[in-house]
Structure formats: structure tokens, C-alpha cells
Length: 230
Length: 230
Image (cartoon, rainbow over all chains, first blue to last red; front, side, top):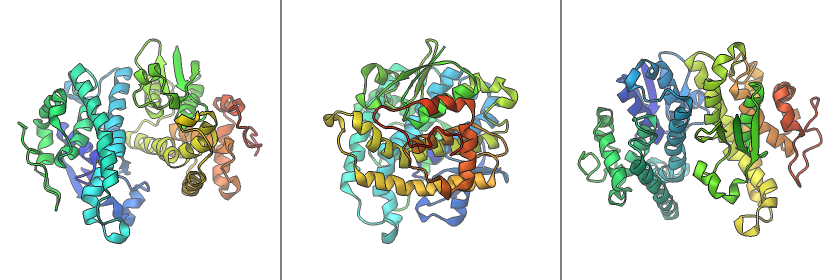
């Protein structure tokens, strides 16, 4: 049995949950609030980042990208056509580049700030960083997102799926982080019609359903969040 | 033939050069100064990060960790005992966690600042960020390094090699980033004797030689940099 320490507003956690959904794996979900720096959690992952996945009583598998590699090695390779990684090493490198782009780079330059300022601060005690949102951090994140959203638009205009002719881990990585930004109403879908069409395909997948019904306390999603036709 | 766009002060570039050395692969090295944002380079890697590896006329393989996966898939798997990745998925996850720790996290929290302030600024025109080093960035990076160096000490006290009983990509990742800090005289070796012993083993490997003889213009290394006995 798999266990996942996650948070609904962690892009890398959502990425792993989508992978698990695609591979039809059951998984116990444990919500972790990383800013609390719980001692037992730090013992599993001294970097204090999410997610952390554990299989049976095995060692901690730390981070979304690394959990994705693990799931590919232990599940994906047996999935034939449904494997979410291509066979050729150079094509795998492109899937990994885009997975890293969305789960790491976009997250670090955009999502992390918006989630911190608009969601986590509501839950954090004052001494641990809680309080009023920092408007300049929000502005900077929104400015950064424009470039990322244009890049997503370019990719979806020029390719069937983000990394090539078949859906891959890169699509789930991008959809994971975009779904958080969409929840928060940060995505101007009309600016990038090809990206909107791609996201509508992603959102319709059964693996997406649990994400679309989940709500964060005190932060309702934008009205169209769960609509497949938005 | 492999080609690597790199910089001598880029930890991820050094990591890939060590892997290439271990696998006895010849590779053409092209020095890239990422702050120049050369158009042809951005076309290969819109994130403008180093390294970028190309095999024959294939697509760009972007980033040290992803190049490491590619080299494992195309070289490592044929190396039997000399493969730098373990066979079991959970052990591979631990190698990947530490590789990411050193090449990404330590680099982002420490090396990147020190290299920018102490090396790159000497080469950068004023308008592009050149000028006097920012003392507070250097202080912050040094404070962060204390924690990382303690962690390296802990790992080397408790394990034969960083990720377990055999040398792996994680050792090369850590040695790559540490070698830059050592070049700059930032490592207080006497504080962590087990780490010193581990680094001395790493430094003695033939794959390390090209790094130890390389010099960055205007920035001489600390006196013991190339000594195997330091």
C-alpha cells in the first residue's frame, strides 16, 4: 500500500496524485502542513518539502519528480501503451525537462508565492509567518506567470501534448500546477485558447476528479474551477 | 559524439563532466556564459540554465539531473558494477534525493550566490548585473552552507558513500558542488573530518583531474584546491 504526505495546494503533491490516478493505484493521503516542521516529518524529509511517498514500510521517497520516477519504474514500465514516459532516452529527457519546468520552475516563480500569500498565511500563526498577504509578492508572481502561460500556449499550439505526440508525465505536471492557479482564479483562459483546450482535455480525465471536488478551508475556488466546460 | 554547453563554475555542469569521466565518455566542451542570454542558447534551453548536452544532432538534453538520467539510460545500464545507479527503485529514489539536494538545493541556497558575487560579477558588464559583490548575499550563503556542510558530515559519518554502500551519482553531485566551494576557499574542512575523508576519496578519482587543473580567469583557487592530501 502507498501512503502520500501531501497538501492540496502543493503542485508536486497534485502531480503525484494525478500519476496515481492514471495508474489506478490506491493510496492513503495524509495532509501535512510543511510550515509546522513536524519532527517526524522532518525525519522523513529534512528538506521539509512535499510530497513524501512511502510504499509499505519502505524508505521515504521524497519529492514529486522523484516519486514520478519511482512510479514509472514500478508501475509505468508494465503499462505498455498507458505508460506515461516514452521509450527513447532523448524523448524521456524532454518529458523530464517539462515536468521540471512546471513542477519546479513555475512553482518556484509563481505558485509558491501565490499559495503562501493567499492560502497558507490564513492558517499560519503570526510568529510563523502568518498575517496579511504581501501585495508585492503577489504582483511579482502574477507578472512571472504571464511568461509561463505564454510558454504553455506555445507548447499547446505546436504539439498534440506538451512533450510530443502522446500524453506524458509532463502533461500531468503542468495540469497539476495550473489546477492550483485555476482554483485561485489566476488563469486568464481567453488569452491562450490552445492551452484552454489542452486543460479541458486534462480536466476531463478520471484521474482529475478527486482534485476538482477538493476544497481548501476558507478559500473557495473560482466559479468555473470544477466545470469541464469553462 | 557528445557536446556539453557548460561553465566551470556551474555545479550541475561539473556533475555531468564527472559522470562523463566515470563512464569514460569523450565530450566536446563549450563554455557558455548564461547571463549573456545568447539567442542560439536560449533556443536550446529557454530556461537559460546550464548545462545543456547534445548527442550527435539530437535534441537538447537540458539540466544536470536530466543529463545524468540520460547517461544512466544510455551508458550506465551497460556498466554492470560500474553503474552509478543502484538497481532497486527505492534505492534509486535515495540517490535521486541526494543528487537533487546537492545539485539543486545546495546550489540554490549557497553556491549560486557565492559564484555570482565572487566570480560572475567580475565578468558581467555593469548594466547586466556586474559591479561590487553584495556582502549580505555572501554572508547569507555562508550561513546556509553551515547547515549543508553539517548534513554532508552526518551522511559521511553514517554511510560508506552518500546514498549507501556503493558510490553513486549522488557522490558525484555532491563532489561537483563542493569542488566549486572548495575552489573559492569556502570549506572549513577541519570541522567535518568524515566529509574531508570522503572528499579526498572523490578528488583522487581520475574523473576529477580535469576539474582540478582548470582555472577561472581572475579568480585563483585556494592553495590546497588541487592537492589530493589537503
